[in-house]
Amino acid sequence: MTLGRVAVAVCDAATYLVGMPTTPVPVERTDRAPWVWASAQALRSRVDPGALADTLREHPAVASATARADGWLELTLAPAWVAETLSDLATGAGMPPAHLPASPAGDPVARFEAARTAGGAPELPATVVARRTLDNPGVVVLLARARAGRVAGQARAQRPGSGAIDPAALSALDDPLDLALLTEILDAPRRLATRPEETAAALLAVATAYLAWEQRCPAIPTRPGETSTPVHRARQVISAAGLGVLERGMALLGISAPGRM
Image (cartoon, rainbow, N blue to C red; front, side, top):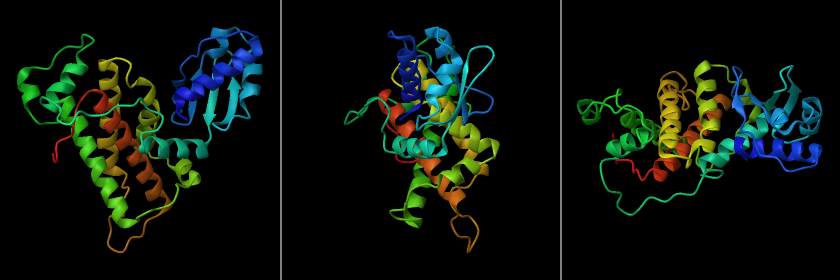
């Protein structure tokens, strides 16, 4: 289940309370994301927010639900649900289906730039598009995908067939870069396959967060003799989920990653 499915669950609960069909409202990040998200479903459905919060407290995705004075709900995600969602995203579950053609045409950086500007965003100067540097958004996405692929290979070599993530280790992560990347990964699936520019924006947000995160938050032991810890494993699953999101979003845009960057 992704955040999109959480939004549907909130809508279903509101429908039950109000007694008539209603439209799901996307959950929005708060300043305490990735753990706390907000929903305006009670306002949209004209249902008592306190009653809606009470209905949601038994949902497996929700550790707690509270009604704010402004009528919005705040939903604190359950660590076990987040861990399961990350594992699903790593395999492509919960995202729109997409398959790359056998031989995608064109330069992947140029294809990304075309998607990024499809909604009218200013185009990059041709000199920037031609450069393979981090001021080029397409390069950022391709590089993040390559780095995530490398981490995945290192994790497989270190722990082939490794077990499930420990939700407690995931919830204990407190580095702002861990939290920023996890927020972008959880928020990305609902933005994929909407419009090309939205897909590109979601990919760029994940990729930008990933490259900053990788520099300071090791997912693989780096010191001689260092053993893998639950924190390493939690970060490996975050990285794998990021890789899943990047690959699926790129496939939706018809972009294939080069063999190396």
